[in-house]
Image (tube, helix red, strand yellow):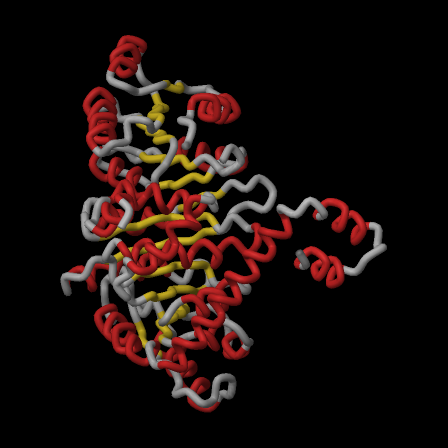
Length: 303
Length: 134
């Protein structure tokens, strides 16, 4: 084992933090570490937490951390926020709501900017999650804003996906739209102290019990939580824990592995093509409409 | 690795509740292409050092208006050094008397930005003085 991985496995935090930086930066040195990093993994439960902005995700994550800490578990968190597509800058503000755990040595929280390029999120996030796993954090939570395709990415990566909704965030039709709810393994209707929370939960349950989508599976549990007071949070943590074994059934594990490999394959191919001396010329030909993108990609993927 | 964004932690140590300046700076730095981790009000030096460690930031920017800077800023620098982060740039902003500025710089605060400093100036300073990553 390299010194670096040994230090990370023994719980040292700065080496872990610095490795996470290299992972985010797509530093070439990470590639060589991958087999060892994976072998050092301890099988942490990978939990995705997603939902629309303002549903209270960060506050709920904060309450969940407290719950798991009471059970003596070391918790790792990756909080992903969007990068500006123009300046590449980002404001990562999830720590504000998690500061009560800042001094807890058994909680490790890292803010990550999505760094748009090549779908930034999932391609480095799963490696970052592997690093937290090797460092002995379990569960490893990945928090993302669910407002587009990112929640689908997170569902492919995580073993258990929690979708956080808030009451009054839209009518029933909003909820039936494809996407967010379909990827949920557990649903939390947060801000449970607001009027309409129980009704929203009932509507969701009714809808999920009859709706199609992934019909073969049983509908995900819908729980009402109030992150600010902690109400319902223990039940949510239990529901997440209970889903772990289901997520590890061979079929589910295989599905996840296949999307991971696909994802890695796409990243590798695109990285390799980008470094190809024919890149500029080929892209230029597509820009002039002399060549279609698919043929261009085919040429670039040929040796 | 020169084109990876610089990561900056913006924190408010101590008890004053005036975070407008810190928020304006956070947004301005984002627009300058920095990744800004904003931690909010009432941070202890320990909390700031812990966050800086986990986030592996290049810069720690401390906004302080309470007058407790002589107690809080050197302590934050010392904690960062203790944790092996002596290469992290520490800068402060706020209302700090000239006599204290000298002492703070001796304690390891790289620069102090007073009222009226433009965000462009701060961004330039960070870019020029941040550690070079291996």
